[in-house]
Image (cartoon, rainbow, N blue to C red; front, side):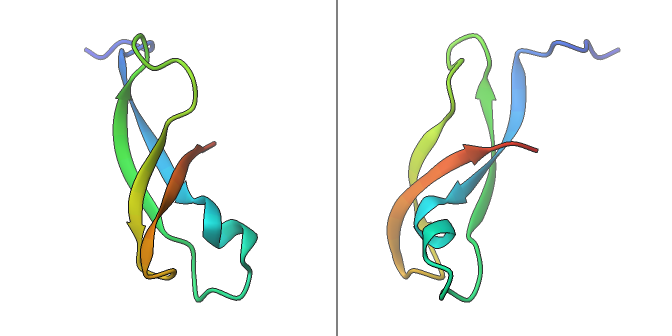
Length: 63
């Protein structure tokens, strides 16, 4: 039985550089989990973007 207010939630991280730059071939996205109690704000991580070919900031987006 799962609760409706789980502590760990699934979030999608999207490259912030690809969103600004419309010339890229696509948008890099990662799926991860975060703890709702420890990280209440939006999550931002440096991840590798295969379209920009470098490490960029990936921010949490709305589902």
